[in-house]
Length: 375
Ligand SMILES: *Cc1c(COP(=O)(O)O)cnc(C)c1O
Image 1 (spheres, rainbow, N blue to C red):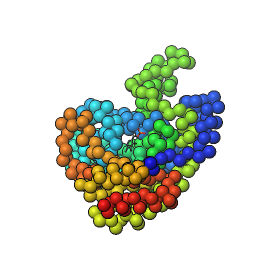
Image 2 (cartoon, protein in one colour):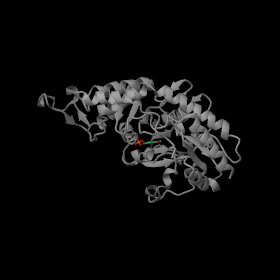
Image 3 (cartoon, rainbow, N blue to C red):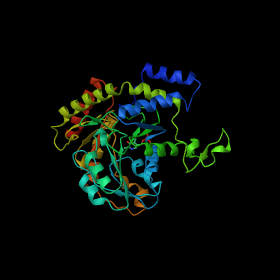
Image 4 (tube, helix red, strand yellow):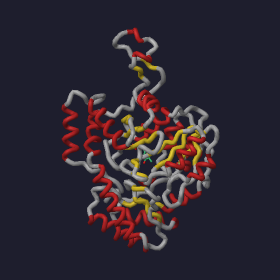
């Protein structure tokens, strides 16, 4: 079965991991600093904090934003549940706003209608790799005294008007899961231009430990002393995986270029099919295509999905609206709340999209898709 996403691992990656394994540091060593510096540079901001997953990155970013019980976080339903769960675990009330039908990204007008004086964070997702409208969302957030967080699990390598994803929001989170645009197996990062947000993120991912004598309450305790001022967790990404990430980052541009070729081939071959919509691209956006979300007639989506899987094309569906999950249903969230996102979900099918696809693979996906969709 041709998967919908897959990592690209080359001899350089293996050599980098082997070197880290043979070094003195398996974790908390120099490869962590190297990877964080490379990620920050790519993001175009000062600070990068590596963590153990994209989910951890969200949990850490919401902690850095100071999310507390009673705060509201406005986000999209068209995402993996972690975008909402990371805030809910800090006690936030999740408020879902609807999406734009062309891109599946948060619709600024819907966000505008959803914010209140309790809104602390607006969390957008760069669905499929397309940057969310950061200019509008950041403006709404700042008017509200809130922060704009960009869940860029799909979009490391994307740019908007020439500016890299990572530089567009107050806080940006990445995932380095194997299907994402680059991988550390499991891993993620929070990036920000703000030194205070970065310091809070760094504390939360490392038990809340304070090592700086200047801010310790009991600095004279002894040279071994470190103290905890707020609770945190251990979300440290080890050197072994950071070494893989640095090695992968060197090939990110090549990954993005191949993804763009595949996107173009699918657009050209499938755009004319009856009842089908190809992904929209906003003005000024240069997406790193993490997914290729095709929309087919809702009433035939399941049959198309099953027929394609039967013919060896590992399609996926991204995503069930987050508030359809029983955890939200049990809190009283009801279907019908975000009709555009629900319609997007009912029609969506993700075709294989990863840099290792050969031209022959792409042709086979196209051939099977055309045949199955035509019925
Ligand atoms: C993958 C993903 C996450 C979570 O990342 P993990 O590394 O799998 O924990 C969060 N948000 C979105 C939109 C994702 O696609």
